[in-house]
Amino acid sequence: MEIQDDSGLNRHLFGTDFKWGVSTAAFQIEGGYDADGKGLSIWDVFTAQKGKIKSGHHAQTACDFYTSYHTDIELIQQLNIPNFRFSISWSRVLPDGTGRINQAGIDYYNTLIDHMLQCGIEPWVTLYHWDLPHALELKGGWTNREIVKWFAEFVELCAKNFGDRVKNWMVVNEPSVFTGAGYFLGIHAPGRRGLGNFAKAVHHVTLATATGGRILRSILPEANIGTTFSCTYIEPLSDKKKHIDAAKRVDTLLNRTFIEPILGMGYPQEDLRVLNKLNKYMQPGDLEAMAFDFDFIGLQCYTREIVRSSMLTPYIGAALVSAEKRKVPLITEMKWEVYPEAIYHMLKKFSEYKGIKKILITENGAAFPDTLTDGQVNDELRTKYIQDHLSQILRAKQDGANVHGYFVWSLTDNFEWAEGYHARFGLIHIDFETQQRTIKQSGLWFSNFLADEK
Image (cartoon, rainbow, N blue to C red; front, side):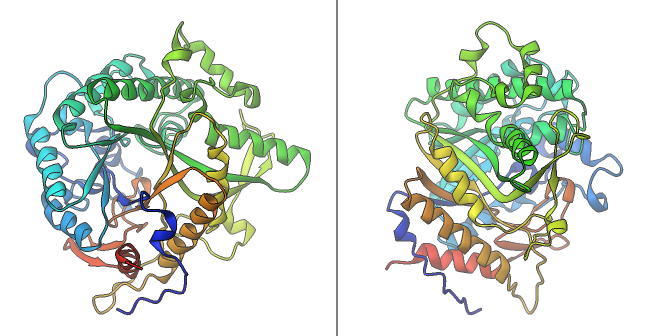
């Protein structure tokens, strides 16, 4: 396949210490849902419920990474990608969430890490990427303050078993998404709803994130420790004050609620009154316990949202104006607007926080309809999406943003949560019937970009 490139991009423009990689998550790729002593996660249980996942899809096999990891790691090597972000399945190493250790799970991740290192690929571990052990959900999950102790046990286990080889760690992935979708809206696992569930989950996740950072630092003082946040560029529908105020509330909820307490600033309650509900769950010393000095912050940015005032919307008084209604030039399979400037604005915004040492883009990518024809996937839209976002990251870097890395979401097509297998984000196409892998045009372009010696 001939790869056209008129982007003008060169990897060396980003600097010699800029980190390049791809990102994945255990539940989305591994399969092996009950293999070798693994316990059930909340997503195993949620996907088994009728009507929760589009087309009734599940992830019992997913991309079969559990048994096919050699193939995929060697594809990463072939694509010249030096860093691989993956997550540890909590219920694979601790089937009951605490207590009993599943040595087969520990052995699996040790073998995976060793194979990566043999292939010259640096492991970047995410500790929690949404797949809470179901046994802990039965005890309240993230709504139970005891989860801070349960999570600490999991972090310690991973640090002691993998920390001799894993130097780069991310504690929690996108807390605003899994608390909002899983504990307020109920559209993701575990399917809980309501402000009370959400408020408790928010506070306990924040405490657990900082606690995880401290445990990693105590066991692995030389490690590179971070955590990741989703972020979305928010703009008001117009310059009317009511829309500007609504956009500020949405920005506070999506982009500030979790990062500011980590930085020791507390929750941004003055700009979003509903966050005062968190005070009910605060205990003496929590303000200090929520803060941790991370080595880096991972940002995951895909799009922008336009916000209007909506007094009918409880708690936040705002509503999103969909990309389809706005008739934007290009939207993805997820119905997200393609707006590369969003990543520039978010990098500039987060660079203004004095407490953030470094920023890495730990996820960015797009789902488009992909067609496998004559053994090829010509995904020009995805290729251009990546190029245009890299151009905006470079622009932000040149304008002083403290950005030091870029990880594409994702290595392969995978189980995309409530979307099942319909939304394909991968640089590599997967036929989920045969598990056949095919590198897409976007993957070939990224490989050429990373191999550039100019």
